[in-house]
Amino acid sequence: MTRADTEALLPDVATVTVPAPAVARRRSRSVAWWGVMTMIATESMLFAGLLSSYGFLRASSNRWPPPGIPEPELMPIAIFSALLVASSIPTIWAERGIKRGRQWQLRLGLFVAWLMAAAFVVESLLDYQKLHYGWADNAYGSVFYTTTGLHLAHVIVALILSIGIQTKAWMNRYDENHHSSVEVVALYWHFVDVVWIFVFTVLYLSEHWCARAPAPTKPPRRRAQHGCTVAARWPSR
Image (cartoon, rainbow, N blue to C red; front, side, top):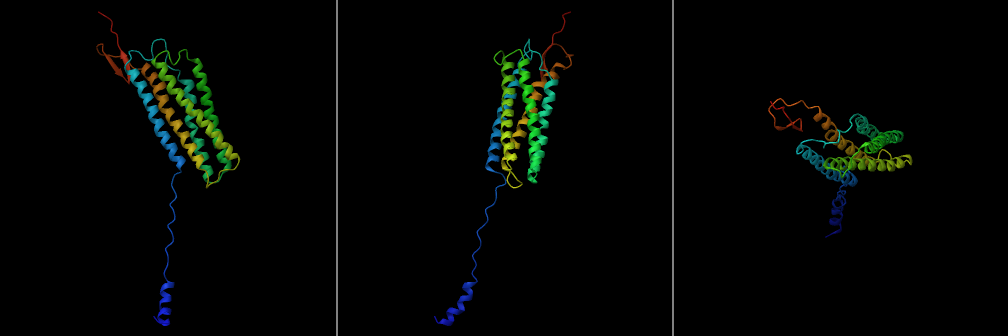
């Protein structure tokens, strides 16, 4: 090959381009977020099992709650239940604030939500002191203490996690691009609030609905009204 032929090939060699390596796609969610979601799925099944057990025990009993145990007080816990569920509002507000780089909004929202949940914990502990039966006295006490106690433990864990997030927030550890731990804790916080809606409905509201169920108008038989077991007694003639 002559020199002229070699020079003729040089432009072709120079125009050979190597494609740039593909940019790695960023995961939409962090590993911690998926870990919390897995934990939420597991804990949801646990609470579903407890509430199902409560419904089975009530349906198989002639009287529920058992004799000597009144229906749970509704009004005090209803107020603080609304406070707990509403704590998700400042949590969402705080999360949206840090996504816009507003440190003050993150700090204020998390602090307000923490106070609301802490008030619920205090009321729950005071409510336990008013009960005159224990978790080992009967089936009702066992499932009531287990379900409400497990949820209360989750609320306390959420409060502890929130303290860690608030501490980092005051240290300016978060900004609009780095706040994954805020999202993870907020997700757990919402889970705790949603679970309590089901627990409160089954353990508190349903008992008062059953107590106000209308009297039966048919011949005596054991039947269920509004999910409540009713044993009717008719006077002899």
